[in-house]
Image 1: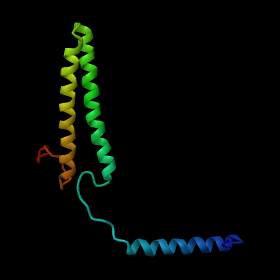
Image 2: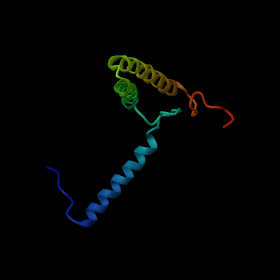
Image 3: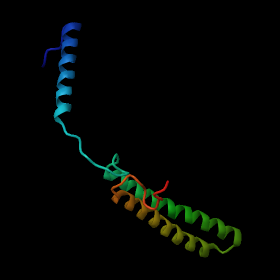
Image 4: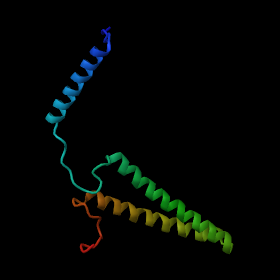
Length: 115
């Protein structure tokens, strides 16, 4: 086993050596250069965001369709229609996220240059 520092002076010396080592390593380590709106997110976060968007669209469509079916008394018709519309809306939002991921500038696709 490694010896532990016996007193406060040894602990402070070890802490100073560690800070010095971290400083030298940070100077040698090059940070990746990346630009874009989703630079801070890894691919798993973006994938889960896309899955959440499509599931939310389907669930919202199912809720609206079931509510309209309950209101009008036409149980399967509106439910099927709005589940399909929710799926299409989820795909559209997912494609917008993919386009945002693929863009190189910081602007969101579809925004006006004058803003």
